[in-house]
Length: 258
Image 1 (spheres, rainbow, N blue to C red):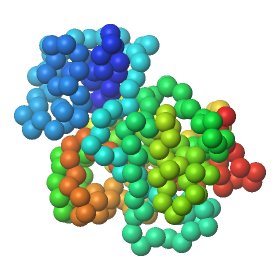
Image 2: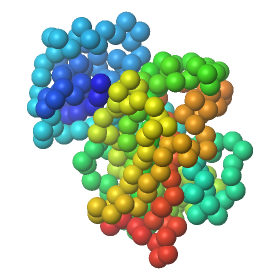
Image 3: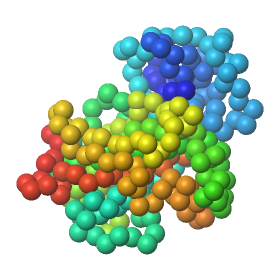
């Protein structure tokens, strides 16, 4: 299934993509769950039975919100593809480099990224994100994929000069309206084997990044095991897995979005 969050009639709702329509499961008056995060955290959620009676609205023209508008936390992984690590002049890491984004920096699919007035160094970073469906602490790698609710696209758009102000990436990764998330989250049964998938980033139609997920230095199971070793993961938490080589700041001359 494909889950998305949207804005409709002054409400933020969510539902399942059903052809050219969205079957509304929550958020709108009369629905059970306030948000997709709430549904993922409901152990008694019976989505299949709810779909039959769900209200349908047209997908075309629907204003989309970030897939998870209200995540408990957004963890991002820096330097997780060998070619990107090389182009940034870094060594292969022993442990994942983790930083966080705020929910307020996110936008929905089709919404404009905003160039801040304090910088013009706005760079793209196409990424795979996954959403936690079942929380836990000290999750073993062998069990980790059972904790994934689904996968989605993310653009970890970065303000490069602010990112370089310190050793921590936080400042450059949290500008308003720089985190497109969507259009939807695809459940693992439909997404299939991660190793058979890849990420492609296009800028004005030109391919700038393209890499299979087998190139990840730290895999999805490894990231779940590592992060859950220092904090409890909860349903609706979002983890961005890092970007491949080809970012604008590493090109000569640099290519920034305008």
